[in-house]
Image 1 (cartoon, rainbow, N blue to C red):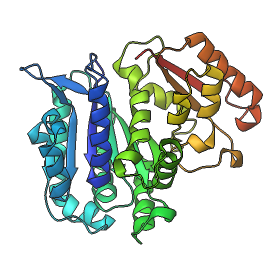
Image 2 (image 1 turned 90 degrees about the vertical axis):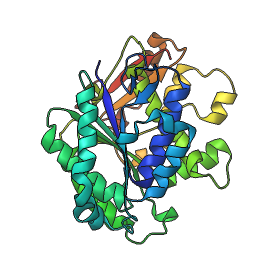
Image 3 (image 1 turned 180 degrees about the horizontal axis):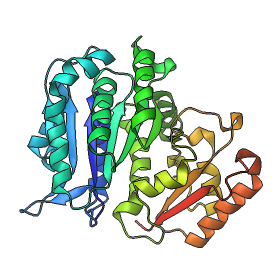
Length: 339
Protein backbone atom coordinates (compact mmCIF):
# COMPACT_ATOMS: atom_id res chain seq x y z
CA UNK A 1 0.00 0.00 0.00
CA UNK A 2 1.03 3.61 -0.56
CA UNK A 3 -1.02 5.40 2.07
CA UNK A 4 -1.77 9.12 1.91
CA UNK A 5 -2.21 11.08 5.13
CA UNK A 6 -4.59 14.05 4.98
CA UNK A 7 -4.00 17.27 6.91
CA UNK A 8 -6.84 19.79 7.21
CA UNK A 9 -5.98 23.25 8.55
CA UNK A 10 -8.27 26.15 9.38
CA UNK A 11 -11.94 26.76 8.69
CA UNK A 12 -11.67 26.49 4.90
CA UNK A 13 -9.43 23.41 5.02
CA UNK A 14 -11.78 21.59 7.37
CA UNK A 15 -14.88 22.46 5.34
CA UNK A 16 -13.26 21.17 2.17
CA UNK A 17 -12.00 18.13 4.08
CA UNK A 18 -15.44 17.32 5.49
CA UNK A 19 -16.94 17.40 1.98
CA UNK A 20 -14.06 15.25 0.71
CA UNK A 21 -14.60 12.54 3.34
CA UNK A 22 -18.35 12.52 2.68
CA UNK A 23 -17.59 11.89 -1.00
CA UNK A 24 -15.07 9.14 -0.18
CA UNK A 25 -17.59 7.45 2.15
CA UNK A 26 -20.33 7.55 -0.51
CA UNK A 27 -18.09 5.88 -3.09
CA UNK A 28 -17.62 2.76 -1.01
CA UNK A 29 -14.76 1.00 0.79
CA UNK A 30 -11.18 2.05 0.12
CA UNK A 31 -9.95 -1.49 -0.52
CA UNK A 32 -6.40 -0.33 -1.13
CA UNK A 33 -6.29 1.38 2.28
CA UNK A 34 -4.95 4.57 0.72
CA UNK A 35 -7.09 7.01 2.70
CA UNK A 36 -8.78 4.76 5.26
CA UNK A 37 -7.53 2.29 7.84
CA UNK A 38 -9.64 -0.44 9.41
CA UNK A 39 -10.05 -0.58 13.17
CA UNK A 40 -10.27 -3.80 15.19
CA UNK A 41 -14.03 -3.45 15.19
CA UNK A 42 -14.12 -3.33 11.39
CA UNK A 43 -14.82 0.40 11.21
CA UNK A 44 -13.06 2.48 8.55
CA UNK A 45 -11.10 5.38 10.02
CA UNK A 46 -9.71 8.29 8.02
CA UNK A 47 -5.93 8.66 7.88
CA UNK A 48 -6.30 12.33 8.74
CA UNK A 49 -5.32 15.08 11.15
CA UNK A 50 -7.74 17.99 11.60
CA UNK A 51 -6.58 21.20 13.24
CA UNK A 52 -7.86 24.71 13.80
CA UNK A 53 -7.06 27.60 16.11
CA UNK A 54 -10.78 28.09 16.74
CA UNK A 55 -12.92 25.40 18.34
CA UNK A 56 -16.31 25.88 16.63
CA UNK A 57 -15.47 24.26 13.28
CA UNK A 58 -14.13 21.00 14.69
CA UNK A 59 -16.88 20.84 17.32
CA UNK A 60 -19.34 20.78 14.43
CA UNK A 61 -17.44 17.93 12.73
CA UNK A 62 -17.19 15.95 15.99
CA UNK A 63 -20.95 16.11 16.54
CA UNK A 64 -21.87 15.24 12.94
CA UNK A 65 -22.33 11.78 11.43
CA UNK A 66 -18.91 12.22 9.87
CA UNK A 67 -17.31 12.46 13.31
CA UNK A 68 -17.06 8.69 13.70
CA UNK A 69 -14.63 8.54 10.76
CA UNK A 70 -11.91 10.32 12.72
CA UNK A 71 -9.74 9.36 15.64
CA UNK A 72 -10.46 11.75 18.49
CA UNK A 73 -6.72 12.02 19.20
CA UNK A 74 -6.22 13.29 15.63
CA UNK A 75 -8.41 16.37 16.10
CA UNK A 76 -6.83 19.54 17.47
CA UNK A 77 -8.78 22.72 18.24
CA UNK A 78 -7.68 25.41 20.65
CA UNK A 79 -7.87 29.16 21.03
CA UNK A 80 -10.03 31.92 19.65
CA UNK A 81 -8.64 32.17 16.13
CA UNK A 82 -6.00 34.37 14.55
CA UNK A 83 -8.11 37.31 13.45
CA UNK A 84 -7.11 36.63 9.82
CA UNK A 85 -3.50 37.42 10.76
CA UNK A 86 -0.91 35.25 8.97
CA UNK A 87 1.81 36.14 11.47
CA UNK A 88 -0.29 34.90 14.40
CA UNK A 89 -0.83 31.56 12.73
CA UNK A 90 2.81 31.21 11.69
CA UNK A 91 4.83 32.80 14.50
CA UNK A 92 2.81 33.08 17.73
CA UNK A 93 -0.38 31.06 18.35
CA UNK A 94 0.52 28.51 15.69
CA UNK A 95 4.13 28.13 16.81
CA UNK A 96 2.97 27.34 20.35
CA UNK A 97 0.97 24.29 19.22
CA UNK A 98 3.08 23.19 16.23
CA UNK A 99 4.80 20.30 18.05
CA UNK A 100 1.54 18.94 19.44
CA UNK A 101 -0.09 18.88 16.00
CA UNK A 102 2.99 17.41 14.37
CA UNK A 103 3.00 14.55 16.89
CA UNK A 104 -0.48 13.67 15.56
CA UNK A 105 0.87 13.68 11.99
CA UNK A 106 3.82 11.52 13.04
CA UNK A 107 1.49 8.97 14.65
CA UNK A 108 -0.47 8.68 11.39
CA UNK A 109 2.73 8.05 9.44
CA UNK A 110 3.93 5.46 11.94
CA UNK A 111 0.58 3.63 11.69
CA UNK A 112 0.90 3.33 7.89
CA UNK A 113 2.84 0.52 6.18
CA UNK A 114 4.38 2.49 3.29
CA UNK A 115 3.14 6.08 3.45
CA UNK A 116 3.53 7.93 0.17
CA UNK A 117 3.05 11.37 1.59
CA UNK A 118 0.79 14.10 2.89
CA UNK A 119 -2.06 15.91 1.16
CA UNK A 120 -3.19 19.15 2.71
CA UNK A 121 -6.43 21.15 2.50
CA UNK A 122 -6.11 24.84 3.33
CA UNK A 123 -7.25 28.32 2.42
CA UNK A 124 -4.65 30.97 1.66
CA UNK A 125 -6.67 34.03 2.71
CA UNK A 126 -7.29 33.40 6.41
CA UNK A 127 -4.86 33.41 9.31
CA UNK A 128 -4.94 29.78 10.46
CA UNK A 129 -4.96 27.96 7.12
CA UNK A 130 -2.27 30.17 5.66
CA UNK A 131 -0.14 30.90 8.73
CA UNK A 132 -0.31 27.64 10.67
CA UNK A 133 -0.67 25.67 7.44
CA UNK A 134 2.60 26.94 5.98
CA UNK A 135 4.35 26.44 9.33
CA UNK A 136 3.33 22.77 9.31
CA UNK A 137 4.34 22.47 5.65
CA UNK A 138 7.87 23.72 6.34
CA UNK A 139 8.16 21.50 9.43
CA UNK A 140 6.95 18.47 7.44
CA UNK A 141 9.50 19.11 4.70
CA UNK A 142 12.30 19.19 7.29
CA UNK A 143 11.21 15.94 8.94
CA UNK A 144 9.98 13.95 5.92
CA UNK A 145 12.10 15.13 2.96
CA UNK A 146 11.58 11.90 0.98
CA UNK A 147 7.76 11.87 1.20
CA UNK A 148 5.42 13.64 -1.18
CA UNK A 149 3.70 16.83 -0.05
CA UNK A 150 0.69 18.01 -2.07
CA UNK A 151 -1.33 21.08 -1.19
CA UNK A 152 -4.91 21.64 -2.33
CA UNK A 153 -5.30 25.36 -1.69
CA UNK A 154 -8.31 27.65 -2.03
CA UNK A 155 -7.32 31.18 -3.04
CA UNK A 156 -9.43 34.26 -2.29
CA UNK A 157 -11.09 36.36 -4.96
CA UNK A 158 -11.22 40.14 -5.15
CA UNK A 159 -14.84 39.91 -6.34
CA UNK A 160 -16.02 37.89 -3.33
CA UNK A 161 -13.74 39.09 -0.53
CA UNK A 162 -14.64 41.01 2.61
CA UNK A 163 -11.26 40.72 4.38
CA UNK A 164 -8.73 43.40 3.44
CA UNK A 165 -5.65 41.39 4.49
CA UNK A 166 -6.38 38.36 2.26
CA UNK A 167 -3.91 39.48 -0.47
CA UNK A 168 -1.13 39.82 2.12
CA UNK A 169 -1.87 36.43 3.67
CA UNK A 170 -1.90 34.85 0.22
CA UNK A 171 1.40 36.46 -0.81
CA UNK A 172 3.13 35.16 2.32
CA UNK A 173 1.59 31.72 1.79
CA UNK A 174 2.57 31.34 -1.86
CA UNK A 175 6.26 31.79 -1.01
CA UNK A 176 6.05 28.80 1.35
CA UNK A 177 4.12 26.73 -1.22
CA UNK A 178 6.82 27.40 -3.82
CA UNK A 179 9.63 26.37 -1.49
CA UNK A 180 8.16 23.40 0.35
CA UNK A 181 5.43 21.57 -1.58
CA UNK A 182 5.96 19.05 -4.37
CA UNK A 183 2.88 20.44 -6.08
CA UNK A 184 -0.04 22.72 -5.29
CA UNK A 185 -3.48 22.44 -6.87
CA UNK A 186 -5.14 25.86 -6.99
CA UNK A 187 -8.83 26.66 -6.59
CA UNK A 188 -10.39 30.06 -6.09
CA UNK A 189 -13.67 31.24 -4.66
CA UNK A 190 -14.73 33.21 -7.73
CA UNK A 191 -14.42 30.21 -10.07
CA UNK A 192 -16.15 27.91 -7.57
CA UNK A 193 -19.06 30.33 -7.11
CA UNK A 194 -19.42 30.90 -10.87
CA UNK A 195 -19.29 27.14 -11.46
CA UNK A 196 -22.06 26.54 -8.91
CA UNK A 197 -24.23 29.29 -10.40
CA UNK A 198 -23.75 28.16 -13.99
CA UNK A 199 -23.84 24.40 -13.60
CA UNK A 200 -26.01 23.88 -10.52
CA UNK A 201 -28.47 26.71 -11.22
CA UNK A 202 -27.94 28.33 -7.80
CA UNK A 203 -28.18 32.08 -7.25
CA UNK A 204 -26.52 32.10 -3.82
CA UNK A 205 -24.43 28.94 -3.48
CA UNK A 206 -23.45 27.83 0.02
CA UNK A 207 -19.98 26.63 1.01
CA UNK A 208 -21.23 23.06 0.51
CA UNK A 209 -22.38 23.93 -3.02
CA UNK A 210 -19.01 25.54 -3.78
CA UNK A 211 -17.16 22.53 -2.41
CA UNK A 212 -19.13 20.01 -4.49
CA UNK A 213 -17.20 20.44 -7.79
CA UNK A 214 -13.97 20.79 -5.83
CA UNK A 215 -14.31 17.47 -4.00
CA UNK A 216 -15.69 15.76 -7.12
CA UNK A 217 -12.46 16.66 -8.90
CA UNK A 218 -10.36 15.53 -5.92
CA UNK A 219 -12.27 12.25 -5.85
CA UNK A 220 -11.60 11.86 -9.57
CA UNK A 221 -7.86 12.26 -9.10
CA UNK A 222 -7.78 9.78 -6.24
CA UNK A 223 -10.05 7.18 -7.90
CA UNK A 224 -7.16 5.60 -9.79
CA UNK A 225 -5.27 5.33 -6.50
CA UNK A 226 -8.19 3.83 -4.56
CA UNK A 227 -9.67 1.50 -7.16
CA UNK A 228 -8.15 -0.96 -9.65
CA UNK A 229 -7.48 0.41 -13.12
CA UNK A 230 -5.37 -0.13 -16.22
CA UNK A 231 -3.53 3.19 -15.96
CA UNK A 232 -3.30 3.78 -12.24
CA UNK A 233 -1.43 6.72 -10.77
CA UNK A 234 -0.16 8.13 -7.47
CA UNK A 235 1.07 11.47 -6.17
CA UNK A 236 4.63 10.92 -7.35
CA UNK A 237 3.53 9.95 -10.87
CA UNK A 238 1.41 13.09 -11.06
CA UNK A 239 4.41 15.14 -9.99
CA UNK A 240 6.82 13.50 -12.45
CA UNK A 241 4.42 13.79 -15.42
CA UNK A 242 3.27 17.33 -14.76
CA UNK A 243 6.22 19.39 -13.55
CA UNK A 244 8.76 20.63 -16.14
CA UNK A 245 10.78 22.62 -13.58
CA UNK A 246 10.85 21.97 -9.80
CA UNK A 247 9.46 25.34 -8.68
CA UNK A 248 6.85 25.46 -11.45
CA UNK A 249 4.43 23.16 -9.65
CA UNK A 250 1.12 25.04 -9.44
CA UNK A 251 -1.79 23.28 -11.17
CA UNK A 252 -5.30 24.35 -12.10
CA UNK A 253 -8.16 21.86 -12.06
CA UNK A 254 -11.03 21.39 -14.49
CA UNK A 255 -14.13 19.20 -14.24
CA UNK A 256 -16.25 17.54 -16.93
CA UNK A 257 -19.00 16.74 -17.62
CA UNK A 258 -20.97 19.47 -15.88
CA UNK A 259 -24.23 18.66 -14.11
CA UNK A 260 -26.26 20.09 -16.99
CA UNK A 261 -24.34 18.09 -19.60
CA UNK A 262 -24.65 14.90 -17.56
CA UNK A 263 -28.45 15.25 -17.62
CA UNK A 264 -28.44 15.25 -21.41
CA UNK A 265 -27.25 11.65 -21.51
CA UNK A 266 -24.18 9.96 -22.94
CA UNK A 267 -21.28 12.21 -23.96
CA UNK A 268 -18.66 11.16 -26.47
CA UNK A 269 -15.00 11.07 -25.35
CA UNK A 270 -14.24 13.87 -27.85
CA UNK A 271 -16.87 16.15 -26.31
CA UNK A 272 -15.74 15.18 -22.83
CA UNK A 273 -12.12 16.15 -23.49
CA UNK A 274 -13.18 19.35 -25.25
CA UNK A 275 -15.28 20.33 -22.22
CA UNK A 276 -12.38 19.54 -19.93
CA UNK A 277 -10.20 22.12 -21.66
CA UNK A 278 -12.89 24.80 -21.70
CA UNK A 279 -11.78 27.57 -19.32
CA UNK A 280 -15.41 27.99 -18.14
CA UNK A 281 -15.11 24.60 -16.43
CA UNK A 282 -11.83 25.42 -14.71
CA UNK A 283 -12.05 25.64 -10.92
CA UNK A 284 -9.41 28.36 -10.82
CA UNK A 285 -10.11 31.61 -12.66
CA UNK A 286 -8.00 31.72 -15.80
CA UNK A 287 -8.16 32.39 -19.52
CA UNK A 288 -6.32 29.67 -21.41
CA UNK A 289 -6.15 31.88 -24.52
CA UNK A 290 -3.63 34.11 -22.76
CA UNK A 291 -0.99 31.42 -22.37
CA UNK A 292 0.11 27.93 -23.36
CA UNK A 293 -0.09 24.60 -21.61
CA UNK A 294 3.14 22.99 -20.48
CA UNK A 295 1.55 19.74 -19.35
CA UNK A 296 -1.84 18.28 -18.46
CA UNK A 297 -3.27 15.12 -16.95
CA UNK A 298 -6.68 13.68 -17.82
CA UNK A 299 -8.25 11.43 -15.18
CA UNK A 300 -11.08 9.35 -16.64
CA UNK A 301 -13.39 7.23 -14.56
CA UNK A 302 -16.46 5.13 -15.22
CA UNK A 303 -17.74 3.25 -18.24
CA UNK A 304 -15.61 4.77 -20.98
CA UNK A 305 -13.42 3.15 -23.61
CA UNK A 306 -9.78 3.60 -22.70
CA UNK A 307 -8.80 3.53 -26.37
CA UNK A 308 -11.37 6.18 -27.35
CA UNK A 309 -10.30 8.39 -24.45
CA UNK A 310 -6.64 8.26 -25.46
CA UNK A 311 -7.49 8.96 -29.12
CA UNK A 312 -9.65 11.93 -28.07
CA UNK A 313 -6.77 13.37 -26.02
CA UNK A 314 -4.30 12.91 -28.90
CA UNK A 315 -6.67 14.51 -31.41
CA UNK A 316 -7.32 17.51 -29.16
CA UNK A 317 -3.60 18.11 -28.72
CA UNK A 318 -2.99 17.76 -32.47
CA UNK A 319 -5.84 20.11 -33.45
CA UNK A 320 -4.88 22.69 -30.82
CA UNK A 321 -1.10 22.39 -30.96
CA UNK A 322 -0.69 26.17 -30.66
CA UNK A 323 -2.07 25.94 -27.10
CA UNK A 324 0.74 23.59 -26.03
CA UNK A 325 4.48 24.23 -25.87
CA UNK A 326 6.22 22.39 -28.69
CA UNK A 327 9.24 21.26 -26.65
CA UNK A 328 7.22 18.82 -24.48
CA UNK A 329 5.75 16.19 -26.87
CA UNK A 330 2.87 14.05 -25.62
CA UNK A 331 2.37 16.42 -22.73
CA UNK A 332 -1.07 15.09 -21.68
CA UNK A 333 -0.87 12.12 -19.32
CA UNK A 334 -3.91 9.83 -19.07
CA UNK A 335 -5.16 7.86 -16.08
CA UNK A 336 -8.19 5.57 -16.07
CA UNK A 337 -10.37 3.94 -13.42
CA UNK A 338 -13.64 2.05 -13.88
CA UNK A 339 -15.09 3.19 -10.54
